[in-house]
Length: 476
Image (cartoon, rainbow, N blue to C red):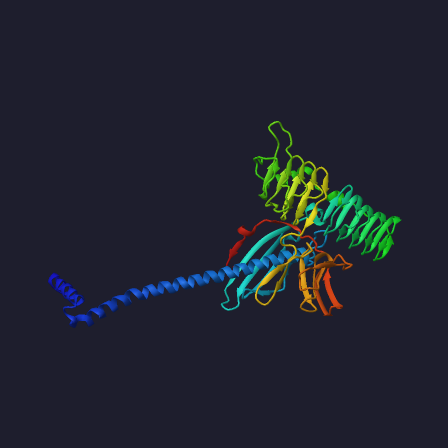
């Protein structure tokens, strides 16, 4: 047996050395057979891997589709009439929502009012692939929270005492004391206050105990005592004074807010009390000194060529100050201050955010349009270019009467117009504070725009089975 094996090996060596070509066919055939034996399982393994990858991609797509169904259910609870304004549920048992298609999947969603208490809502979202019929299910439980989370932050400005308006406000204003609006200042929202003294412009409805209007109000006006009517485009009506009971009851306790925002910042102190270079800051904690004294924070770059951008919560135990010529980008973040907050005249603020002070707020900056709030892009046939928008509100629609005469509309009754193809945009007076979401016209002097009520801030939600803890599983 060994001699035969050795003979075959010697013969194979001679074949590949070219000395005996007569055995080439046998050798090639041998290797083809060996290749078939190896390649077959290899191809099978590759096909199995490809199918597994396709299945994974399909399941991932279904997962995203099912998660979109959960978000849709939350939106329906917030805005779709499933909950009343006081938070009570308008249904018992289970409510099936209208199905929809996304990512090639049919998504069906149900919302269950567990125990019919209107406290916990179970959401079940199924995404079924239209081509294969496979399905992925996402289940989540959410509960809306009210109190100050639901209405305290619903306004652009809220106060239990007086409010002095030195700038524009794109939102409702509510204060129990005197609201003073200086000449040239604008409120794009409704107003409820104890006393209104205004030389500015209000694009919403007004309800106040005492009216002293020297400016213009485009909405309806309810008042108890009249000092001066001024210019009112809507309907003025004598009415009982506004009730601030809800505001007083929902006003958050200092200790609760302090604990809430303290959890969002580091436990160690920010080392400096002055930020004098441009860049990003936050989360940031200006805690107490070793002797227990509160620490202040000042942002003082003395230049508008760059900005200090907030990347997370800023917690200050002392006073917070922004000096003139300094640009701060709130970037949707929160400044929580146990002392006073002072944005000095000549300082500049970009973007939206939340400013809370236990002390007094002095807010006198120049408002700069934020990065993402309002954007207008123009395509010239080859490239898109960004144009300068004079508005800080979100824009929703655009329509052109010609290549040079174009109109854009958006939140808070914003209407912009250009007559030179976007080289310069100017704001128009819309006589409304409501959001405008559509515009159409037959000519530059024959245009229609439509919209709805101002944005109602969403409910604050506590997710008992949060995003990365939701149960992903096949149908039961």
